[in-house]
Image (tube, rainbow, N blue to C red; front, side, top):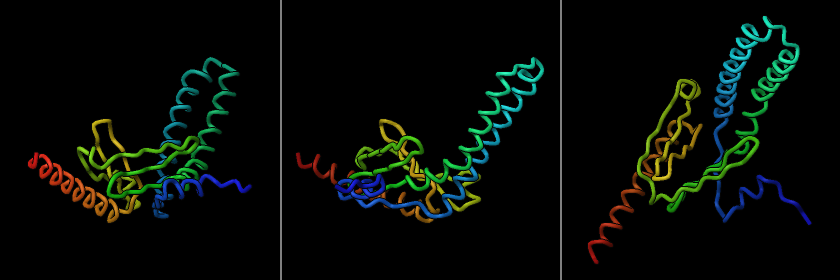
Length: 177
């Protein structure tokens, strides 16, 4: 009996074809992990400087060292796994996003439930030429991240057209009753 990998299973889920992220998304993920890691290390350094070292807490020094190593390991490893696990699919009925590092999360949003669409680009996104599409529903927000800017605009436009089609279909159906 052949055991399938997670990627093989993800690609076969309900016959859905998932899109992968562009290579520049990996660079953006590494940059954002570096920024977050540096901020974490600065906070850890401040705690050490103002509390642990002046009071000479030996256990605190060891805990700080372990935390610093974990932050550095996370900076090096998490973008790689996030990049290779991130998938999204958009069809006429729903948006399906799979993402995660340690735990893989899957969000499926019916297109007829969309309330608001927007595209956004933060400073790092602009630097690496990526954007995100933020979809708001009654239950919250779902984001398709690290898309090429042009692709993000195409997705947003296609979703807007589909929402308009659904609204027209519902108006016609309501008018016939």
